[in-house]
Image (cartoon, rainbow, N blue to C red; front, side, top):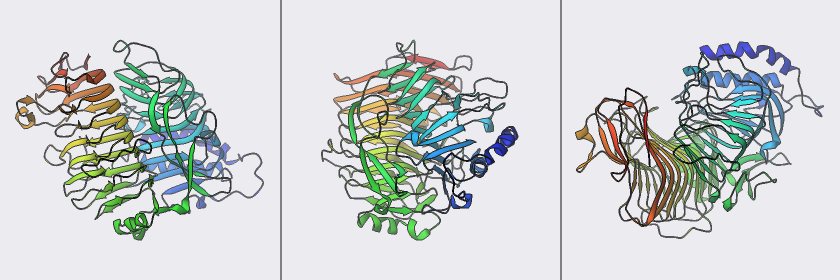
Length: 601
C-alpha cells in the first residue's frame, strides 16, 4: 500500500481532469457508478459504460487495486468489464482481478491513458505477480507515470509472471513485460502468456526469464533471457537457439481461441465461442470478427458466490443436466460433490479468477468423453481431503476420436497449498483424445499456507493419457515427483516452464528407484510419437544438497523429438545440481558462486 499511495499522489490532478471529461456524442445523463456492480453478475463484477463519470471509474478501479495490489492469497475476487466505447482512465491490475472489454473485437473498447501492471509492492520484483488477466480491449498509453512505476508515455507496462494471461489486446504503443525497482534497475519477472494480440510498437521483455507468445504480432521483440517461444506469431524475432533463446514455430497447427463475454448491438450479453482453426498465423480478429458462434446469456447458468443457492454442486449439476452452460463469476466456491460436464459442446467460462475447492476427496470437476467442451478462466484449488485429481478430462480408458470437434481448455490454473492447506495425487488428468490445452499454470505452493514437503503433497501436476493432445504454454512446478507424465501417443507441446521442488529435505526422500530424483518432463517408455518445443527446467534446492539425474526423460524412438531444451541452476544449497538435461545427456548445472548457471541441448 505504501507505493500505491505514492502513485495516487502522482495522478490526483489527472483524476480532476478526468471528472470533467465525457465522450463525444453522449447527451443523456451520466449513468451512476453505483450501477456498475448491480448487474446480473453480482457485486464482484463491475460493468462500466462510457457515460459513467471518468473520475468515478478511476476511483473505483484504483480502490480495487488498493485492495488487491499485494493480496496474493486473499479471498477477494474482482472483474472489471468495459462496455464498447472510449475511456480516459489510468489504473493498475492487482491480484485476483480480470479486466476485459465487452466489445465483439478488441478495438471496440479503448483505454486512453494507462492500463498497467506494476510490481511496486515488491520493489519491482514481479516474480510473484500471479492470478490476473487483461483481455479483449485496446490501450492507447498516453500518460507518463513517474517513480516508482517509471512508465513513459507511449508505453504499456505489464510486469507479470505465471497465471496472468494477456489475450485479444491491441496495444497502440510499446509493451514492457517488466517493472523497475526504486533505483531504476529492471526487476525480475518469471514468464507469461500473450495470445491473439497486436502490439504496434516494440515488446521489451528485459529481465523476463521466459515467455510464450502465440498468434500475435508486434513491430519488434527486443531480447530474451532463457526460453522464449513463439508459435504462429508475425514478425517473430530471428536468432538461433541457444545463442538467442528463441524457439520459433511459424504456424499454430490447431487452436480454438478462448471464449469471451461481450455485449451485442441490442445491449444483450452473449458469449462468443471461436471456431476451430488450423495452421494459423497472427491475430484471429485482424481482418474483422473472429469466426465463431455467439451464445445468448440466457443459455448460461450464472454461478454467484454471493448467492449460495446458485453455487452448490447440486444446483450446478442440475443446471448442466438441463442443458445449460456455466458462467462462474468471481468468488470462492467450496464443492461437496464433483461438477459433472456430460453434454457435448458445453461452455464453462469463469471471469475474475473464480476458485473451485473440493471439500471431499472427489475431483472438483470431470468432463465426459464427448465432443467440443470448452473450459476457460478457472482456478482449481486443492482441499484438505487428498483428491485423486482436481480436474479430469474424460474418464480413464476414453477412446473416442474428437479431431473435428476437440475439447479445449483455456487459462486453467491449479494450486495446492498457498492459500489453503490442501493435497492431491495429480492436479489434472487428460484421458480424452485430441484435447487442446491453451495455457496452464499448475503449482504446488513453495510459500504460503500449508507449504511443506509432507503437508501440501501434490504427487504430479499433469498426466496426459489421451492421444493427439496438443498443449500451448504449460507452466508446471514444485510437485513432489514427476511434474508432467505424458503417456499418450501423438502429443505436441509448445513451451514448457518448470521449477522442480524447492523443499526436498534430503536425497533419500527423492529417489525414483535407483535414479536420483524425478524428471520434470516424463514421456512414457511406451510412447512412439511425441514432439515438444522450448522446454526449460530450473532448480532451486533450498533445503538440502539434492541431485536430479535428468531434467527430461523420453524414449529413444524415431518419432519422439525434443527441440530446444535448457536447464538452469537458479540458486540453492551447495552440492545440489541437475546433472543432465535429457536421458543422461547434456552438461550439469550446479552451484557456481551463487549465480544462475545454464546448459542447453
